[in-house]
Length: 479
Ligand code: HEM
Image 1 (spheres, rainbow, N blue to C red):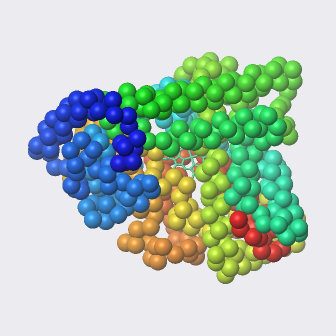
Image 2: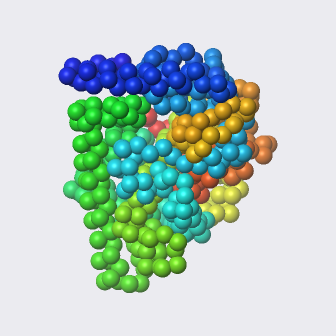
Image 3: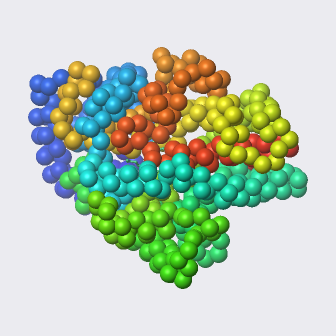
């Protein structure tokens, strides 16, 4: 945070001072409130608790919560009151008991710009649009049945990845598993979403660059988010124009994909994308023609939902794959158990079906344990209190941002024995599952805003049995 402030040009100083005065007054009036607020660490005027956060915000939240509020803790990120949720009981209160009160997401300028003015489901405010869009994604694009239609395509991509790893092994070259897993989940998600991959040639290069910048924009620190009056400084630092440019470039790319698909569907009205499987984009264009949907699906909605599916599915899945493989290589006894299970279920067969996968309980436990220790989203995307609400005896004001620290919850030693150890066995005898929302295991979130892509992600992760099976061949060199 200090380093962020140091970078600001000197001529913006008067602006700071003006804003500081206004914020300081607000801060003081808030402090004198008679409401019962959750415990807070001491805060500084103007910046609140921002100076106490390091680069890994979930870890800073965890260490602060251990000292000040191990269930609920109130921080001030600049002028913005922010509730940090660090226990499974508190998570249940937020995402079950009071789910409706916290079912919205905050709206920032950056979010509005990159999400077609909050048409992206992930960032959409709670309401009719969000409800209808979620039902399209959950029931039509990411249902069990739909996810199964991608089995063959998924296996083809996995087989290509295994081939590349095997080639590295045979030629005694190190395999860059991180890169290979990224390409794998990128290709599977692209094929399902757009009906084709974007990994080669000029278009592949452009796509990669856009995606890289998109993630940079998502990960940047915007003064406006914590000090709304200082939005102008983001503009002076060139951040605002970068967000605008990246949103425009992504939009041009997605529009190109939509135009290409429309042309393809017109020329060949019978199915479909690669391998004759209907991709999300084709399904969405069909739904667009259907008048019975409760919302207008214009071009921006189509592109926003494509963005949801692509961005939601790529980095998350590759992160789980990479961590699972890392843990297996660090724990050879666990790797051996996976191999034994794969061998015994396959029993010499070369083909694998969903029934076989269902029998691989240990493999599922490995994936669950990986997401427990290494959740791709350590903090759930922020929510916002839609109105004043009392949670566990504390008054939470409308507009408070809510950060559920699933990293802290899933390493809580009060709930998990040997919480820091990779121990898939813990799930073999336990009733805890992603589906049941026990609020101790939350890699996909919970409640109304929970992840609609869980079935899609699990299908990919479990079908990566081939990768684990490939590990029977020998050891890889990690780079
Ligand atoms: C291992 C893979 C994945 C993980 C760990 C993951 C995790 C999450 C989490 C933690 C949330 C926020 C939940 C909450 O606020 O309670 C979320 C939301 C979301 N995810 Fe996923 N996700 C994964 C894969 C996917 C896939 C494959 C898709 C789509 C193809 C997807 C689409 C979405 C969308 C659209 C939302 C926003 C839902 C809403 O706000 O209502 N995710 N995901």
